[in-house]
Every structure is written in C-alpha cells, then in structure tokens.
Image (cartoon, rainbow, N blue to C red; front, top):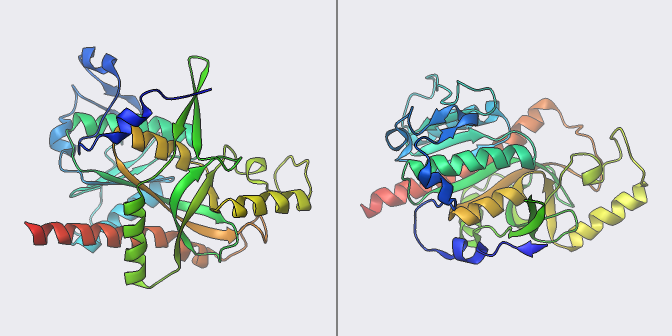
Length: 313
C-alpha cells in the first residue's frame, strides 16, 4: 500500500484550471467520452461547456433534472416550465442538463459508477477549457445521531474503518488517496444555510461504504451475521470518530476532485437516524421534502456567488 506519489503536487496547484494527469491524452486525435456519448471530434466542447462554473452531481437522473429546473427558476435564466434536453441522450448510463453556468449530472449509485462518470466529467471540463469550477455532490444519506432531515456538509470522507482515505487498486497495487474536501466551501455552505434558516445543517465527517446493507451495519439485508448490539457498537464508534452520516460515493468524489484541482463539497440530507432503525418509514411527502433540502441550499449558494460576481464586475 502506498500514497499516490504525485498527490500533493497535483492538489497543491493554485491554478483555476481543471487538471487531467494523463500524458496519453495528448497523443489522442479524438477523446471519446463514451458514457456521455460526447467526444472532442464530434462535439465543440468549449462552445457547449466553456462557461460552466458550477457542477452539481447526484445519483438519479430524475433528481438532477429536477435540480436544473429548480436552479433555472432561482436564477431566472430560462423559463422554468421549459423542457431541458438531456445532453447525454445518446446513452442510458448518465443524464446531463445545463442552464447558464450550471451543469447538472447524474452519477448512479456507488463508488464504481460515480468514478466512471467523474473521469469523463473531469476530461470534459478540461477539454472545454473551463476555469474556476466548483463541484458539489447533492444526495441522501443515513444519519448517525441526527434528526431526520438534517443536512450534512462533509468535512472529510472516511472509509468503513473511519480512516480518511480512498484506496484504489491500480496494476495490482493499492494506491491510497486523500479525501479532504474544501474547508472554506463547506463553511460558505453552512453560512448559506444559516441565512436561509429553513432546516438544520451541520459540518461533519461522512462515512463512505461499498454497500448499502452489510457495509452500513444494517440488519435487514439478505445476509446478516451480527447482532443489534454489534450494529450499535459499530455505529457509536463511527459517531465517536466524528461521523455524522453514511453514503456510498463521497470518498472517490473527494479524491478525484482534489487530484483535478476542483473546489468540491458534498451536501447530503439524512433520511433517518441509523441508531434508531434501518428502514425508511417516513411518508413519501416527508421524504420528498427532505430530498429537496440539498438542492435548496446549493441553489442558494450558487445564486449568492453569481450575485457577488455581478457586483464585483
């Protein structure tokens, strides 16, 4: 096991560009972003995406289309009742929507799915020559000792042993990457939530697991070889380590964004307190209200940033 030798060098740059670290890309006549159904020869990426300043990613295509409709109305950029086409309509893997400087992309469920998406998204932003990009994952999670509906802005993503690292096996060797997220961005999001004063928001560590059931100490999966006490001991240990919530994408998201120089944050709402149960028993309307909270917070942040930019210009 080793640390990525160029981790510090890659993430320490103060440049506002989006970095790729792959010399092989320079020799390619055409870079096909297969899972987006886009490419450098078939599409004018700078014209399509060069003005992007904010990227929001989330699990489901429906949620990300809902977000772009919401942000369009908030920014009064386009008719919120208009139909926003899926830029990735040529594939059924991911969905992508855009309004003004905001890009909204689905990433599926779990580390492998979001990692594939991020490789192609980072290359897209690089090919489009985007600068000063902020990327935020919005989603849902299970809370630990928090009231359902609480929004958690991730300070640091930790693995299932509560360590702040992401392990990637490359050529048969385990490479360990840093999972820190942008502290100042997290604080700015927290301040936005205070100004909104609509729901509780906290900053804390997020545990990223490889599984929804056994990996998160649930008792309701197809397999379970541990007791309720074992579960409680484990989750309380996570809580003592500063973990506020559990999801399945934050570690690789943090690692890849740091490597590419992207300012990044994870904003997830808690749907339940895992110390009190495993299954979602809240009504559809309550859960829908909870799921809107990250987009409300992030929408407020984007609106605030764009307003400040206009005042400076």
